[in-house]
Image 1 (tube, rainbow, N blue to C red):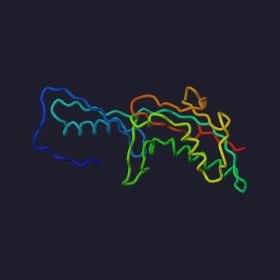
Image 2: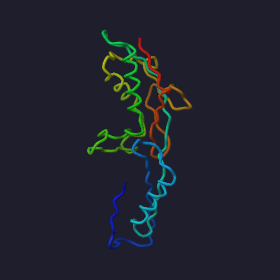
Image 3: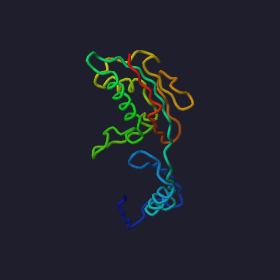
Image 4: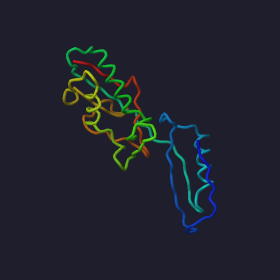
Length: 181
């Protein structure tokens, strides 16, 4: 939903070409239809400065695959802990919340690649897993956590750089494998 604002005058230089590209998603972090993107682009063009070029593009999606092993605390059901860890990983790598420091609501603060949100931090993912109730620890190295993109399935034990302009992680449930030891 957009609120229309009318500009009464144009202030600034003429004949100086400037450009802005806006990368958009829907509220769930998924790609918009081409019609919706065209509508947004046309709406933005109505309010641009003279000679200002406006483009609307979709974000770049990177399929992240994760293999994790956790050691459960005594008194917890392994299957329950594994399911909770899987959900925590999927939520962390969701394009809906990726880069949202406030995690929704009116306090949302979106961060982008210039603030480091073009990288899936290996240690941050370990932290997400270890924050799940019932997890004692993640074994070190690839025995505990391995991440990768579609072409390098679960091969990295280091930070994972996402590709493309306005990169977002995309995590399919079938590509998150969690086991307990």
